[in-house]
Image 1 (tube, helix red, strand yellow):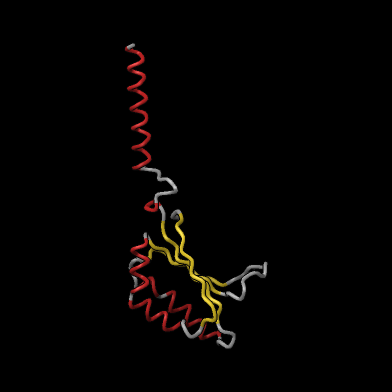
Image 2 (cartoon, rainbow, N blue to C red; image 1 turned 90 degrees about the horizontal axis):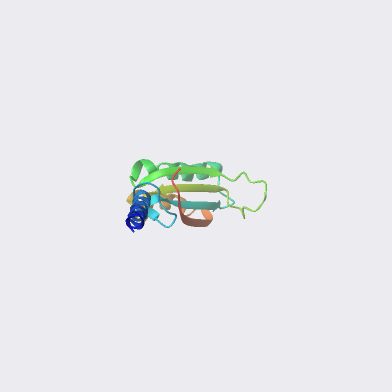
Length: 136
């Protein structure tokens, strides 16, 4: 009986140890705190836009991380896919935030509003897609 009691205590302690290690170390996929929020923006620019006008958009967007402190990561590029399925979208921008609060602060930030004024007359279509991902 004493042996069974000790086995139950050992199992209980093991369970507590496993739960504690999960909270302090590894996180599950359902825990947004363990992930970052990516804000993906894709543009199809107007056909009559000059390359310099497109570059102004790229430069303005690329300048936002220096102006908005909730941005923790930024990447951008142009489509190089050989599949031919881009639907005319040529540029992608990926802005990374710690959480929704950071993204929400970015969306109303005056620097973002200034950027939107640069791009809004130059794009034919825009796609915005936000997703949670593990930090890299």
